[in-house]
Image 1 (tube, one colour):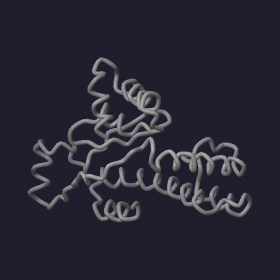
Image 2 (image 1 turned 120 degrees about the vertical axis):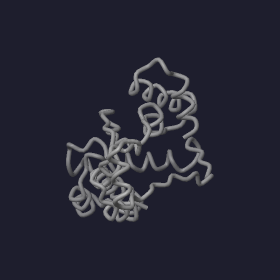
Image 3 (image 1 turned 180 degrees about the vertical axis):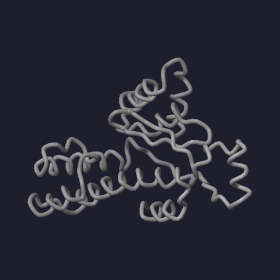
Image 4 (image 1 turned 90 degrees about the horizontal axis):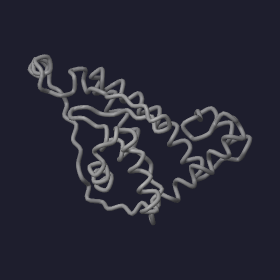
Length: 188
């Protein structure tokens, strides 16, 4: 987001992860926005020609090269591969849709995810956040705890989206564009 990029630019002296955490804290505290850390992290740690696979709990991350050619498109191997086979292009577009994370649906969804986590923790005490849950945990919570409705949808989306994200990173690195397309379609 624009605010995340501005915050990251204002704190150049800090290391990447610390800067991202400080930027998130600023949004949480001073803007009263219960945002996550993804935008701040990408603004702080992203590099040209690479994607980031971020663990939002540990703040570990790894750069993901696209198509196995290094991701920068400026080396001899990538140029040769582009001449031999057509490489798909990823397009990032600004939809011009505005969001008010502090007053909109985002805080409601955060609360719903926390409620779903509390229910799932009754099934599996090792679940601290939805990222710890499995589809099997969700199915067990449906039958034993009555997990349903919007809380079920939130939990199922987070769990399956996390799995799709990891699978997409692997497919991108391997240049498996058919799998990438399938996973993107399943995502939204």
